[in-house]
Length: 203
Image (tube, rainbow, N blue to C red; front, top):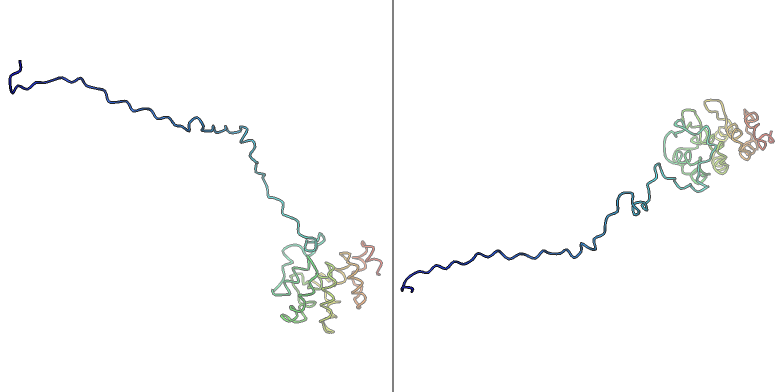
């Protein structure tokens, strides 16, 4: 029997903690497999080409001509700036008679046929003749007085070449004719123009 006030101890068997259910990743089955390097997906990727990409061609009226000759290289950098330097640079690509008036206002008439633009003592007129820029030459001739027109025909560079020599050497028959019509001396033009039938026919 149990006496009043007696403490009774009851052994309770220990229970293991409940197991947490393992969570399933619902996206595991749908996870795409990354292709191996060189696999079918990687082989479809475009490959980079080495070297510089080709630049688009310039429009014909602004393209640098292939006969630049004497005026290519570091020695052709123009002296000074402003409109005269713009004419000097653009003559390689196009006729630019519209800039002649601005250059005249900025630097006077001597800038065209008397002022050397590089260390070879070549002038704007020399370069215009070499590249066959007749419209520019006509615009220059229209603003020159007698002294300037004489320089247009007779001014020599450091090697003794005149404007007609530059035109003849590059086969610019239309410029050679214009210069001859305005009284240019034959100078070296007949010999320099001999390889060009259209120029040779003018002498």
